[in-house]
Amino acid sequence: MNAFEINGLSKVYENGNRALNDVSLTVPKGSFYALLGPNGAGKSTMINILADTVRPSSGTVSLLGHDLFNERNWCKRRMGVVPQEIAFDPFFTPREVLRFTSGLFGCKPDEAWLDELLDRLELTVHAGKKARQLSGGMRRRLLVAQALVHRPELVILDEPTAGVDVELRRKLWDFMRELNDAGTTILLTTHYLDEAEELCDHVAIIDHGALLTAQPMRALMRDIASSYLWLNYGQAVTLTDADHDALAGLEPRSSDEGVCLKLGRSENGDSTFHQTYQAAVARFGPPLDAGVRSEDLEDVFLRLTRRAGGDDAAAECKS
Ligand SMILES: Nc1ncnc2c1ncn2[C@@H]1O[C@H](COP(=O)(O)OP(=O)(O)OP(=O)(O)O)[C@@H](O)[C@H]1O
Ligand SMILES: [Mg+2]
Image (cartoon, rainbow, N blue to C red; front, side, top):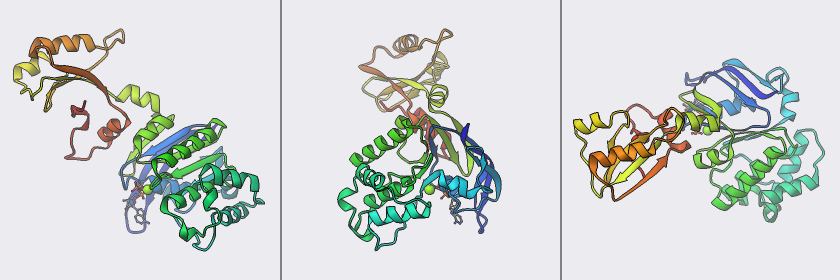
C-alpha cells in the first residue's frame, strides 16, 4: 500500500506561472521521504495541493488508496501538514492553538498528547505566551506540533526546520524519526541536504516543476554519486594533451593543489583506487598527500539541478 500516489500533477497559476509539470510520484507507506529542489522548483506548490490550499490544474492523487480530491474529509483526518508560511492568531497561546486545532479535526483535545507535543518540541516553557511573543523558531515548532495534534498517519512538512537552531533541529528530527519508526509516513522538504541524506530513506528531486529523479536514497547514492581521488602536489598541475590521453577515462582535472581523478569500479565491483593511484604516480610522481572524496547528496543534487552556465560541481576537486 502506498501513502501517496501522485499522477500527472500539473499546476499553472492564474498569472501563467507553470509551477508543476506532469509530476508523478509514489510515496510508500512508512517511508521517510525527502522532496528536494532549488527555490521556486514547485515543492510548496505540490505540498499545498496535498494540503488542499492550492487547486491543481490537472492530475490525480490517491492517499492510502482514497481519492484525495473526492474524499477530502477522510484524507484530511489522516494527514498533518506543516506549511512553509507561518500564520497564527497573535493572541492565542501555543496551548490554545493546539486545543483549537484539535477541535478543527473533530477531536476533543488529548491533553496528555498536547503536553507531550509541547515537551518534544521544547515549547513547554512557552506554552502560556501569546503567539506574537514567540520567536521565529518557536513559531515554526508550534506549526509542527499543530500538525500532529490528531496523531496523523501521514505527516507532510514544508521546511519544518527553517530558522530553527542546530540543537532544536536535532531534537525535532529525533522526534520525527521516532514517529517514523512507529509507522508514520513522513514527506518533507528541506534545504538542509545533509540532514535529508541522514534521515530520509527515499528522495525525489524536482526543478522547474519537473521531476528529475525519485528513488530510494541508497539507490540514488549508489547509482549517481561518484568518488574522486585527489592528489596533492603542493601546486596546480597543468594537464597536457598527453596527460589527458594517458589518463583517459579517469576524467583528470587540475585543482589549486594538484590533480583529481575519478574512481570507478572494476568488473568484479572492486574500487579502482590502486590502479588510479598508480596511474597518477606514473604520470606526476608521488604526491605529498592523497585522499578519496565521495560525493554526498548535496553534490548529486547540485549536479542534477545545475542550471545552464553553472559550475561543474562534481568536477570540483574539494578534499
Ligand atoms: N500564488 C502563486 N501565484 C503565482 N505563481 C506562484 C504562486 N506561488 C508560487 N508561484 C510560482 O510557482 C513556482 C514554484 O513555487 P513554489 O513555492 O512551489 O517553489 P518551492 O520549490 O517551494 O520554492 P522554495 O524552496 O523557495 O520554497 C515559482 O516560480 C513561484 O514563483
Ligand atoms: Mg517552498
